[in-house]
Length: 466
Length: 120
Image 1: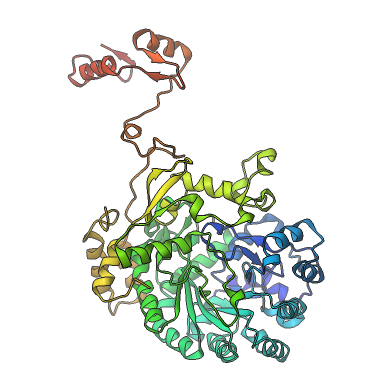
Image 2: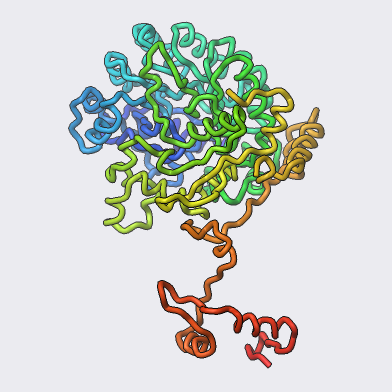
């Protein structure tokens, strides 16, 4: 691997792995910036940094752009205080808010948004252990997103997850960009091998836990090289779903990012990654470049077919092909989970669920669904709480008075009605939803827009009614 | 309405089918080149308005332009020759006279010189 990348990863991320985190000072959970189409908008990390060095890491892209992060200060959430908050005794303002809107009704906690809960830091310190044990004791539904097979297979964690295996309040997304151990070493520094990760999928699945193969980011040129074999191996290991999202490129690249881009470009076979992405990404989505549907289609078809043929949940977090989700959660959580219904406790008030329903309606009846803002984002009081939108990127540019009155719903409404916004459903989903009118409340009404590929796939015998 | 709305029927099929056929057995580098040649995204139709309101989807909105005058004197001069309503928001009342001037330009019965910024 490129020496500069290893040096940078050591400076930025892996340097943390031998550190002991400060026991408090990191604020989490937070509301996901993807609230518009996210089934689990309460996203949690226990640490301010991750002890894995993945070359494609989007959190690295965000964090390395922060000029305050030259000197790494590794901080943890206050574990005792978080346990108290979840169990009904919140003390701080944020804890009270999250208790009111989420903990109280045992809303599914998604752990692993910007860092890996079972990374090398956890492997050394076990600082998250008391919190995970408490979540088990409380039967609190939790989905982990991780690559930390070595930590999960440590005797301490084995014992813990054995203890709660009948209760099944935990679920696991195991992330992989390839099934090839050698190729993985080229893009993931200090991360357990794919073979080890498949082992942990089997281990957890055999205990009865809901496990998901998280093909994210799906890097065209890397992930597709052994896709069929990876899917087969994961199925054999016991996965219940596959969740995919394609690698996206931030146009605002610093030196560290450019070094990583050059390395990725070399691996996928293009001389200039920035040029490749800017040429193939729809400009309507802004500077966070996502390749267009036509490039992704063959890979989506492979995974969708595999999932439907093997009765797995197909989940797609990508804006393209989001309509193909077979559950309303693009992380791959089931619509129904009788073994522990608390794992169904994610929100349907988001676009993934409604797009999936619209695609099914069209292929079952031929009817074209209409999307109304107040239908899509109904029944979620947290969307209307002004205290939960203060740290949304959209508040930048608003004066302080506006900022403190702004709610997540206001932000969603502004994006919904602004047809030039990259976050507008028309642009973000690249015409999967088309604006057709304005309703009585003055909000744009969108309509499901069937596309060529759907007709073609149906002709090929692919079932789109699921 | 329907499948042809965005990706024109047959158009995208041709490109993606062609890509699938041509990429078989190719190296990663060759595949990237092919993608860049064949699979560029289609531009989605532009929208006139940013923030949508009840007029956004009307035929009138599609035929509407906003004019900003360089200074108030220019607007005063414009008002002298054309009827401007100030009700709700300033707008031109009656387009016939303006269109007659435009038609003269079109028929080259009057001309406009970009350099001197004068009509003759």
